[in-house]
Image (cartoon, one colour):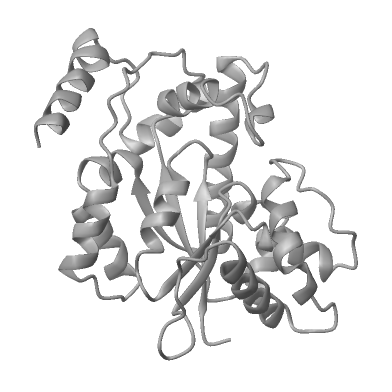
Length: 277
């Protein structure tokens, strides 16, 4: 296929939906909102029923199958199924997205952080899309825990219902380790981007990301990304990290403990500043 595969990996509740939306502002990129295409193709080409992916909500897969399931052909190449399914899903769900004048995107992918780096599925991805690129989105685990605890409703809320802080922290560690294993075992081509950089300095963050993708980023595009990015005003909370979490947090330069000024005053000042701009 002429397009290259592009996948968002890492943890949920890390800003992947916002990242997907900002990527889709670029005319040469289409990243779907949780089409579950990797899992769907894995099942299809292993002659397995297309069941629910075991580690995430089935809502995205069910929606995508309803829109684009009729494009799947078990006798076609994996790459052809990928493009046909994603394009049909785009036309049916991402209706604001336009196909480039030359008829094809430079990159096509999916926003499914767990699935796209699942150690069971990754060899299948790399076998069929050897030039895949991966965007590793990382958010401080304390923010992930707080976000998960506030998102215990809706189609994906069941993932967090009844889970303790320690269990959510362990899940964050698991999926960060999936990414680390992919780097060490498969040497995947990866760009790491941090949630706080996307929010605090979106122009700089996306300029670097588009450069890595060998794509131009116009002033108009970066201006629109900046306009659509909102600064986080939420107070921070401290949690008790596990030994494994401490190791991973140190790798990313994340603080173990936030003082009262960092937890309450700075978010308030950011809110006031954003209202004045």
